Image 1 (cartoon, helix red, strand yellow):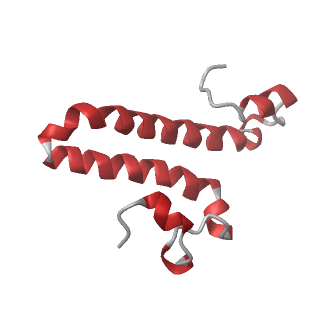
Image 2 (image 1 turned 60 degrees about the vertical axis):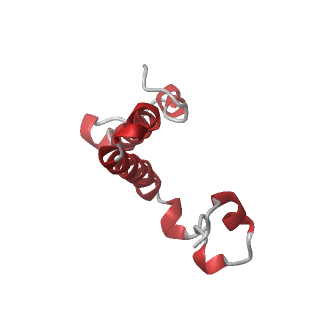
Length: 102
């Protein structure tokens, strides 16, 4: 088990590293799920360790918010079949931004 994520990522132990170039990892739902799982794991830790709650609330909130943003964008990308028209170029560009506003 590696104690330092960065050192592990730079090692030659490819079998135990995260595989970012695998086709199934590129899928946006797998990417989105990572944010939800990260938030859930931090939440579970904070639930058991009261002394960590005050500092972990910020990354927990960020990870859940980013997960929701990615899920909403995923839904919007499929909206054309629901609204009967393609997304405009402006709408397509907006989906590439890190923002939930219109």
